[in-house]
Every structure is written in structure tokens, then in C-alpha cells.
Length: 165
Image (cartoon, rainbow, N blue to C red; front, side, top):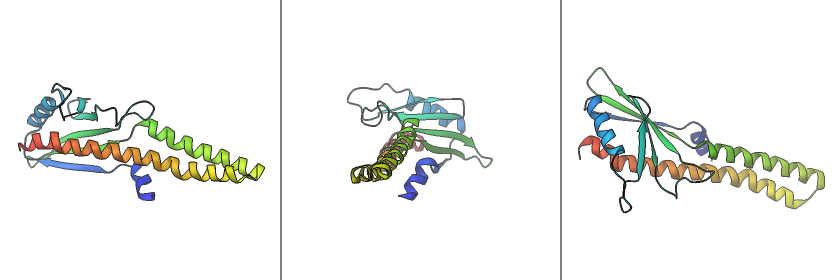
């Protein structure tokens, strides 16, 4: 659990290397991200370029991000190395709503623990333990599912397009 919480707050960076020029990669990414979305289309990735080297990807899906939970994003940076290789560095960013809910659950568990100490009620002790363990686990789990779906779709639609497969 500690490993997942650490990944929730400090996501790993994934590096993809291509033998294409940076301009060609940007053109292919722009083509994929600006593709028209249809109802029965499997490609549910949306994205935009923040500048000429950085872009964000998120999913157009009600299951992976609505309301207070929000949408997690993949933020990618395109770097051209000196040996002719182009690198795409991906970093997952859980939505701020998940961080807020994480700390709301922890705060409420502390409040219920104080009530349990003041009243001696077992009900408040159980509520405190449930919120202290279950709430953060729920937030981390939702984040992991969203990010795994984003990474799978990145590989399926964008990486495949960039490699020319």
C-alpha cells in the first residue's frame, strides 16, 4: 500500500525513444489528437499541445473522470537528443480532486477518532479506521485505474502510430 501511495503523490516517468525527427512526431501526434471522435470509435483519447514540446492527454469517458473525481492526465514532453533519437517522456498526473478527497478522508478519520476518544464509542473507532484506511485506498485505486487506462490507450493509439505499425 505504501508503494501505491508513493506512486500516487510522486508518479513514475516513462521514457519512449523513437528514431523519427521531432517535427514528424509532433505532426503525427497532432493528427491523432485532432482525429474526430465518433460514438462507436474506440479511440477515446483527447489532448492538446501546451507548447511546441509539451502535450497533455486525457480520456473522453464518463467512467474515468466526472464530477469531483475529475480526469487524470498524461503529460508528455518531447525531447530531441544529439544522436538523432527523439524521446517522449510521459508522466501521469492524477486529478487534484483525488488529492482533495484523500486528505478529506484523513481529516474526517481524525475527527471521528477524537469523537471516539471523547465518547468512548466503538462506532466512532470503527468509522475512523474505515475512513483512514478505506478512503485513501479508494482514491489511490481510482487514480491507478485511470492512469492504467490512459497508458494502455497511449500505447494502443499513439505509440503504435508513432512507430508506424
